[in-house]
Image (cartoon, rainbow, N blue to C red; front, side):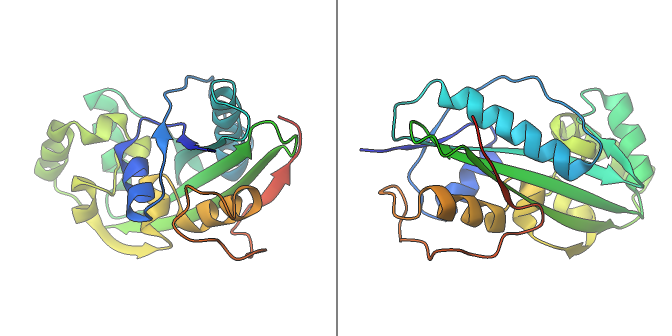
Length: 213
């Protein structure tokens, strides 16, 4: 029986598939991430790379899902800070400002020769002003160190959001509209889905097919 594999260690991405009652297994893959000219091109390419790497470890007929997310502020892409000092710098920069998350999703079925289907979404959060004490508290939770832009919406970070334009799942790293689009192109009637998906949904921003794995 065909299986779905999520090429990610992210608990937030796993939780989104669980919410949708989609049966899946996880794969931990390591790929070299690239930064391209635009955020949408970056997340689409990195998601594609992850999906292709995971594809090498599954059986013919299995489906792989991979995702990548970056955070953009004033035209700059902010990665994972990894250090408390850089996390403080990012959070100070975001205080009272808008931040945009771009998430790309890639999906392929091994052995079909159809290539990779990719789609991207974006969402913008307007942050309230943080006090220095709040920044220190948030950095102390450890959450900002491993999140793009030092901000994660799925746990503590949501308390800093004043307004959200776009989907929560985009900030969480696996946007549901993009996920729906790629699954409908690759695995609309697959046994791991709780229901069959209707054909030909409109793609979200950046939706397109890339041929050749």
